[in-house]
Length: 269
Image 1 (cartoon, one colour):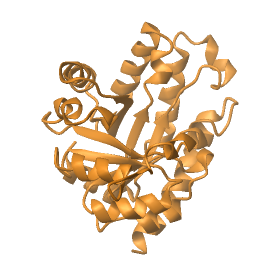
Image 2 (tube, rainbow, N blue to C red; image 1 turned 180 degrees about the vertical axis):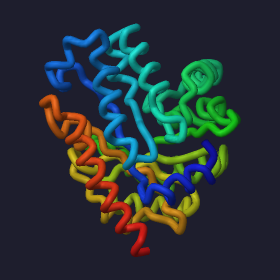
Image 3 (cartoon, helix red, strand yellow; image 1 turned 90 degrees about the vertical axis):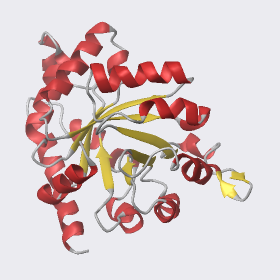
């Protein structure tokens, strides 16, 4: 998906919602465990009820990898079921030496055909560049994450810059706003404001609203650019809204609530 297509999708739907498919066998409704593929059955129903309100889906690959080959099969079926006009994110947080990264890139972009993949920049440019250069594919670089341990390293000062600022200022030279995004946690509004000043035109993927305590309005106050430039993710707050046979309907209700708030924000700016 191109940058223009993503902007247009946000405009058409009045939404910049990304639904995180962090699907856990221990958390899905118990009646689904009787299905041949409980994970896919859960995801399919979630997608059916939320796709009207979202512009992106983000499966966290760990939830699928943990189940071995059956999990990978469920992930592939989920990806194929997501409507073609939705932006897809493989939340895999990969990166390694160059030839290994090239294999990761082929796995997610050529074999599975995701639109994007999250990557960890700690190993530097040669670990990230192999993900760049695929037509209409995106690299999403971890910058300032929402987890408590993100403070251990990301906010340390390095020659007058916070480490996450150094990561962004260096890595933004590897790609462009047409193929590179950054992860900034919703619980780090002060970092979000600084990051938007450094990269005014890049898309930012924002996890952490809902269950992790981030606030959508605060995120938008600090992170919106003239064309929106945000994908805000909600996982548990949507997909685990209910544990009964009405789980998918309730997920749709939760997604619609967020979308309406987003529409109001977009229409008042």
